[in-house]
Image (cartoon, rainbow, N blue to C red; front, side, top):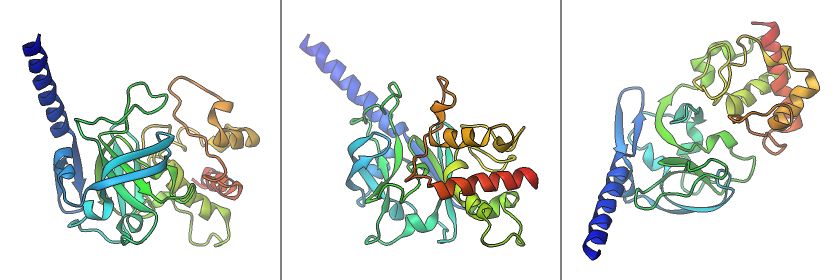
Length: 274
């Protein structure tokens, strides 16, 4: 029995080590790409222990081994005006402004890449069965609620790539130059890029695939009654619910009343000016 137990322990250690080695992250800029393993990142001397007191994915305090984003991006051809596209294994994809990732160590909030070790798996995400946030998770230290978009906490991360801003990559999203600077559709476009494009494309623009395209075949302002749409944005399950629903509830400190009206103004403008 002792021999069998020792053999099983050795087998388990080999399996867990292999799992850690198989966890890979693709990193790319406009010229080149590379793939790194969790094991390599954990061995980086810049990796440290980071505690997130109010982790929004786990809903409690979490402690990770993590690498500062500025260290992760070191050596890439990247400027502060660029974006970094983070793509997850579940088809979630969002562009994060590079300036938020490249800020100096004294700047808050600060981005880290949390790394799940094969020998110390993270707990399951609440209400997600056995699914964890691993193998990689973009987390933010000292981020006040509403200060960093909820979409910028990217878990189940598979790759990151330096890109142009969404406004430059998909110019069809923009409103015309002659639209007054005070028009709410301008602010609404920013809210779409920050909160919605990670899951919803618009007329094909974007990379998110978790939710439906917001322009094809119809714009939501054309099939939602106005108050029902506002209620849906605040709490999607209060309007319609289904087993695979992933639409989050945008409470006011994530999407203010002014921002919600601006988002609706942008969708309305694009519906009337395709």
